[in-house]
Amino acid sequence: MRTMEMRMRLRKRLGMRSGMGNDAWVRGMGVMGAGAALTLGGASSVGALAPEADLAYHGSVAMAAGLVDLRLTPQNLGPNTVEDATVRLRWSAPLADVQRLPGDCAHSGEREVVCRTGPLAADGPGDRMRLKVRLLGEPSEVTLEIDTVWGGGAVDRDHGNDRQRVLVLDTGDSYVF
Image (cartoon, rainbow, N blue to C red; front, side, top):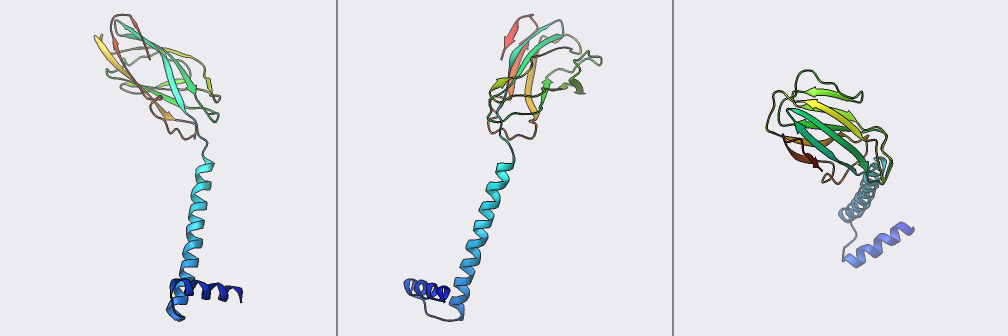
């Protein structure tokens, strides 16, 4: 009885007459409203499942006679901890075939190396990485691109600080990023 009373009041406010089409319209609006509520509720709960983190990379790089010396510190600006992440290091010149890389790094292409960061606490730096790579030949300059390949399942909404691009001249000087 209460539902019928509410429908009548709604019809009166909207200037509608009683009839089959109007009932269907009111029922349709009720179903549509419930569907929209379910959809919105579902979207917000799905977003809540993925933790959020803000990864960043800082360090220095130097090159002399085709040997690149890279010191890199990953950092998580939070708000959630990241169990592990993978950083990609890509050079504009090809790497020599034989490399001596740290255990958490792997040669992944003609110009690429990927490295695990290890756990990254929220609002703190990770373990500093140091690696030396030999380039094919002795280029006078190389561009190093740094970016996150995998963020440990966390969502990173700010890619401005986890993507770096550094021009390194073959002078032996360190370039800080």
